[in-house]
Length: 393
Image (tube, rainbow, N blue to C red; front, top):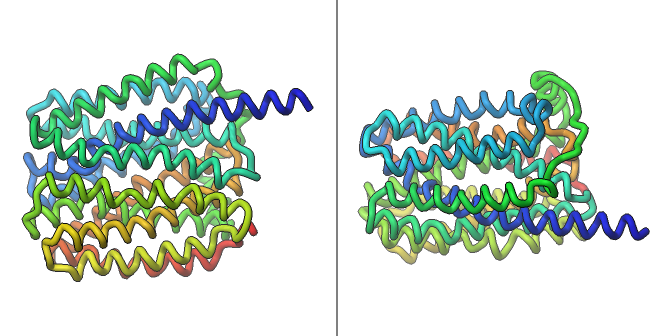
C-alpha cells in the first residue's frame, strides 16, 4: 500500500514537470505559428505558400512514420534531447536568416522537429497516466499548452511590429532554452523504462484501420488538424489581405479567441471520465466548427468585434473536439503503443498537407474566402466518424 502511494506521488510530481514543459513549449511553438505564412510571403507569392507547407509537412509525415524505430532503439528521453536541439537550431536559423534558402530550410526543420517533440511529450505524459484519470490528465496537460498559445499571439504581434519577423523567431528560440534545461535537469525522473510494442508501421496502420474506434478517432483528429491548418495559415492572410486588418488588432483577437481551450478542456475531461463519455461532446464540437467555418466564408465585415466573436465560437468547438479526441485515444491505447501514438500524430502534418492542397486548388479558381466554405462542408464528415466510435461510458 505504501509503495503504491509513493509511486502515485512520484507520477504526480513528474506530471507537474511535464505540465510546465508543455507551457514553455506551447509559448515557443505559438510565437512563430501565426507569422509563418506572412514570413514566407516575403519570398514567394501567396499561392506558393500552400505548396511550401505541403512539402514541409509531407517530410514531417515521413519522419514521424519512421520515428518509432528511433524511440525503440535509443529511448524516448534520448530522442527528445536530439529533437530539442534541432528545434532550437531551426528557430535561431529563422531569426538570423535574411535570405530565402536558409529561411525555407529552417522552416522545414521547424515543422519536422516540432511534430516529433510533441510525440516525445505524448509518450512521457502517457507513461505517467492511468486510464481512470486520462481525461483529467490529458486536458490539464493541454490546458497548460494552450495557456502558452494564448500568451503568444499578442506577444508575437508586438514583436513583429517592433522588430520584424526575426524578433518573434528569436524569442521563440530563447523560450525553448529553459524547456531544454528543465528537461535535462529532470532527466533521471523522466527516463522511460517502457517495453514498447513491436510491429512494423504498415502492420500497425492496418490494425488501426480495422478498428472502428481507432479509425474513427484518427479521422476526427485529422479533420481538426485540417481546420487548424486553415485557421493558422489562411485566416491571418484573409484578414490582412482581403479585409485590411493589422497585426496589432489580430494579436489581441488571436489571444482572446483561444480562451475556450483554457476554460473548457479540464471540465470536459472530468465530465468524460466520470459521467457521459466523449461522443456527445464530440458531436457538439463538430457542429460548432461546421457553423463557424461557414461564417468565416460568409462574413465580409472587417469589424474586430464580429471576427473576435466568430473566432472565439470556433475555438469552443475546437476545444471540445481536442479535449475529447485526446481523452478517447489515450484511454484505448497505452504508452507502450508508441507506434499507434506516432500514427495518430501524423494527423497534424497530414492536416497541413490536405489543407494546403485544398488551398492551392481553391486559390487557383476562387478567392481565398471560398477555402472556408470547402472546409465547412468537409467538417460535416466528422459527424459520421463520431457516430462510428464506441463511447467509453
